[in-house]
Image (cartoon, rainbow, N blue to C red; front, side, top):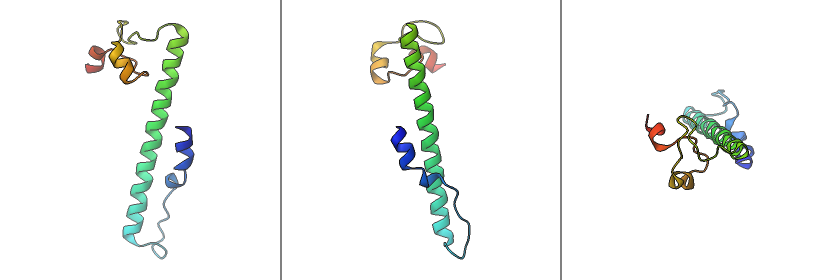
Length: 93
């Protein structure tokens, strides 16, 4: 994930709005690419935070327990996403 952040760093830079160098549609395309890259970076950061929190729960002996209600998280749910912090009932709320 960290390598992806470096690979898309150029796409997240501010878009130059100088009309003499780039046409309007090219600028709009550049802005769209920039916004998509920024959103991807936000999602990567969120996922890294979730993974770090799961690792702390493992170290603390709380992994597999819902952080909201304290009940067990279904093994199938953890197999699907090992970083999930809540049981399915709390996730639905």
